Length: 70
Image 1 (cartoon, rainbow, N blue to C red):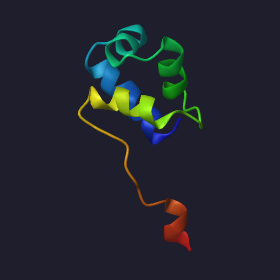
Image 2 (image 1 turned 135 degrees about the horizontal axis):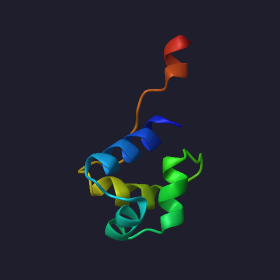
Image 3 (image 1 turned 30 degrees about the horizontal axis):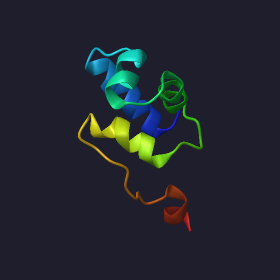
């Protein structure tokens, strides 16, 4: 799992939501929530932002660990 998937899953559980609840509230499909929480590598950013908006977050640039090692 990646940081994003861990964040969403942890936040969802802390609010007592099921994956189905989260998908309904965010306006995305249940399959999308499952793929997001499983760390799927290619997801639509607009849909990810729909989910993150429920938690008061949005996607943004983060410095890559690979760049720090160079």
